[in-house]
Length: 136
Image (cartoon, rainbow, N blue to C red; front, side):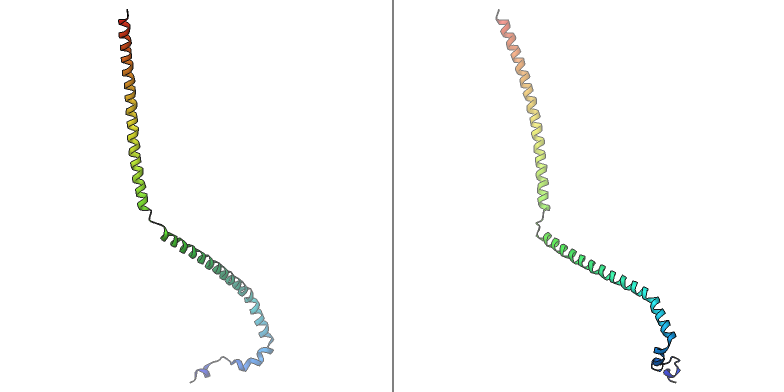
């Protein structure tokens, strides 16, 4: 048995002449086209919109890629700052220590100055009282 002989489908060649003259088929075909046409048009619009969005996205990704390459190149040219930052922190610590030492020294000098003035006033008072007692 041959596969083609079992088929119930009629050949296109056999009905080609009937297809053009058959009004029912024309109306049915036109109805199907009118039924699917809005869906196909809407699908086509959405596909075009998606393509445009993809093109815009591609352009943005390319621009971003260029910017990232520039940043990467710039980072390779930047010297290492971690050692410099550590040095600055050490210098800041030393300056803070020296500032504390100077503040403490200034407070001590101010205290000594007050003690010297106090001692001078005592001596001046003793000298004045000795002079006053010797003058009679």
